[in-house]
Amino acid sequence: MATTTIKLPAHVDPAIVRHCSLFDRRPTYDNPYETVIPAIHEGPAVFFADNISVNQPGWVVRRGADIRRLYADTEYFHKRGNTGFAALIGEDWDMIPTELDPPVHHGFRSQLAPIYSPTRMMSLQASISNRANEIIERFRARGECEFVRDFAVSFPVSIFLDLLNLPQDRIDELVRWVNDLIHRDQHDLRVAAVLAIKQLLVETIADRRRNPGEDLISQAMTLEVDGRKWTDREIFGHAFNLYIGGLDTVTSNLGLHFHHLATHPDDQETMRRNDHNSNVVAIEELLRAFAAVSNYRICAKRYELDGQVMMPGDYLVLCSPLAARDPEFYESPHEIRFDRRPSHVTLGNGIHRCLGQHLARRELQTAIEEFFKAIPAFTVEPGYKVPFFLSGVIHIKELPLRWS
Image 1 (cartoon, rainbow, N blue to C red):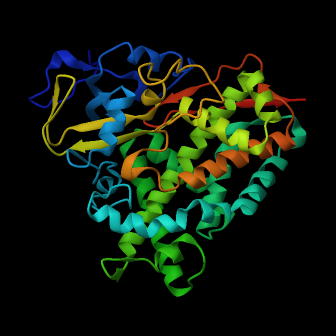
Image 2 (tube, one colour; image 1 turned 120 degrees about the vertical axis):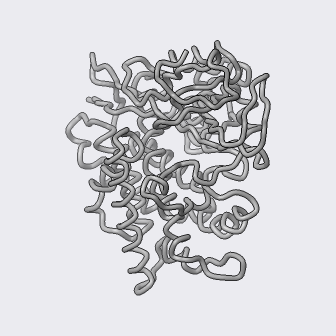
Image 3 (cartoon, rainbow, N blue to C red; image 1 turned 180 degrees about the horizontal axis):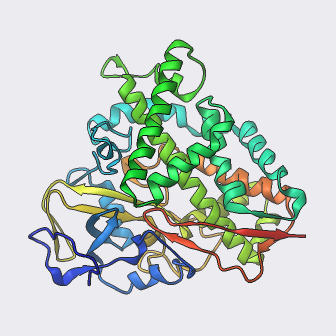
């Protein structure tokens, strides 16, 4: 049963309301992939939770097959305004393309796809590798690092700054803003973060109007939709989407992947021996097993699933960590099998599959390969209890690594 007082929609039976600890926005020293997630899979296929996001109740779907089907359903579920970031500051701009629905979505997504294609992302390999090596070199000789702070946070932020041609000395403030917005509950901090991000991006857009270059904002200025150039508001919506998706998600995945490798020396040794192509396959299994992000939809039409009725306006969470560990979808889902070659929804599914998926994969692959080149076998600091943070983006708050 729910543990907080919420205003239930009239069609929701209080008897089916639960509190879902997976979205508690708190640290835990138990690995949620071994405790919380398996426990949810012992329950109903769909239930109503009091806490799927900040002050937001909604439906939780646990089965992988259902999650895939709902990802693809743009008739009964929509995305516009589902993040609530614009509403935090009393505005109504869209994060592009993630908050767009068909048919508008197609025009913007089709224009962006070539910019984020595998070929274009591959062309960034040298600069991504250089950033990884620059950061690793800061702690390589120490024989230790706090991996989240020293690498997992700064690495994707440095890439984001390069993509927007912004100075690297802005890393600390960008990290602070995304943490306040994504991982904190305080309304004032979240509002201040949106305003600060908006100011930076609006100022950058104005500068690129005067001094266009090869950065992603300058490229967006050349795009057209419905026979016209994108507006500054639309360019801002895309840049905001890039900021949110490009920083926090990669950081979370890095922390989870390196935690597994540090606590499973046989898997670490296997990846160290693997060639590049084998590790590309292995990383897909790590992405599957340690999916971190939950995505949200809003019901547009009456919909029934497993005997539960969802009505227009209801929020729904499509939780990739639940899909990743569904025993009805995967054989032995809690086993890490580097030869599994899994189909997964870690980076979304359907028309809203992550636009930056090829960049994210390249960052993850580069991080692991460059780390292995520079750092010998590593483990978690003996006796340290690793804190996992439960929320719409599961992540590890601190990960002290040691090596000889």
